Image (cartoon, rainbow, N blue to C red; front, side):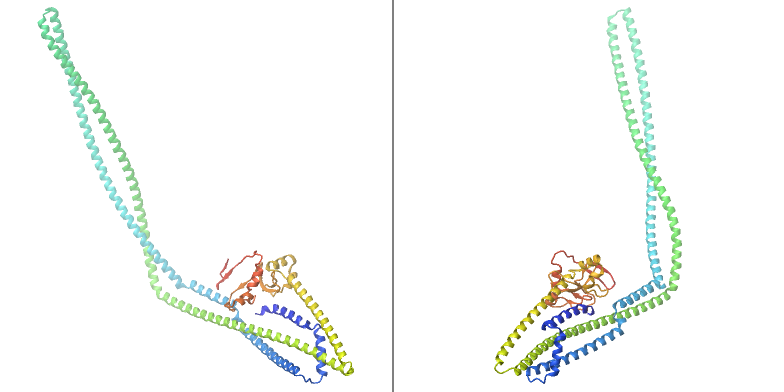
Length: 557
């Protein structure tokens, strides 16, 4: 509210310059003849003058009373702000709240009962982990028992394989014995065949000798069937021997192939089972060693846990007492924090109410100032009328009655000429004032980007005329197309168009308020739709949103 005073002062200076120049003469030249006329002239009889004087007296009394009320109100407000400045500053309240939060955090972190509670939680978690490990150990022991059963089954399978191997060996020996028997039989058959061949050869020789000596055809006829029978018998034996040899070789091949195949399969399976059993034995032995170590460590851990549980049971009453104390302190701190927060809200509401009252008082002061200006204009008009009347009376007394009409006509012509001259001078002065006003407006920056450019290129000297107010970065800007200056806050090259921070300004307003803008640029305000239209008319603008909560967390969009 206070940071709007520079802009108001500039507007008041412009309006006072215009109202003072409405008569075409300086204020001193206007006031001196009027005062002289009031002192020297007798009491007027006109009712209009009496009404004007009465009105001026009433307005003066009203303005004086309002000024005294404003002064007393401002003094009371200053006294109240000075007395309650420590409570009115939101930053200090936030700092106290942060300090209280830090103390609560330190108390929560530094209290031994909380540490003991954390240790108890850690112990319970470790006990649950130990239980889970015990369950895993039980599962591993069940797996070990399953592996042992599998090992027993494998040993049984190995014994069965060994029995099968023994039976195969017996079968092989029986096959070898059969093969030996068949070889003996073949050998006997060969010997018999050789013997029969020799007998046939002897008989053939005898028959040949008999045939040669006796040459008896009956004997030859008798010997030939016997020799033929022996030859057939010998051929039959030879064929049987050949078949037996072929069968024997085929059986030998089959037996050797079957035996080799079975033995290779058995050996391969035995090697695989032996490797698997070796790996299983190694894993089982390693698991058994790990189980022994884990069992020992678990026993030690259980002893430690029992000792810690005993200590905890001993210190549990003290811990409960400390916890109750800490909770009581935390409740007290939270209640104090709630009270401080309520006091802060009440202070903010009171400040908001005072700001509203001050704004209404400023509006009333502005209306009173306008009334004073109107009264001054009316006084100047009245002085002009009085001076014209006095001049007219003096000229009427000094001239003759015959020349009274002519003098009146001459006086009217001269008064018209003087009025025209005054009007032309007034128009010229108004045009001069408007030109100066336009030059001042044209020299102002269009937005905060030009303000930063003026700072960079020309230093702070070029920005002194823009209406900077302290360290709040408040500047006067004149957007393109807008013929009156605008007070706003600049953050680097960003022009602030809206701010809501403490709820001191009511944003539930009419469309006219949103079109013209409301609030203060240093506090909560809205720049106005018309000014926003002039600022963004070139379509080269960027909107930036900054949000901050009570914990100083900031978000940008």
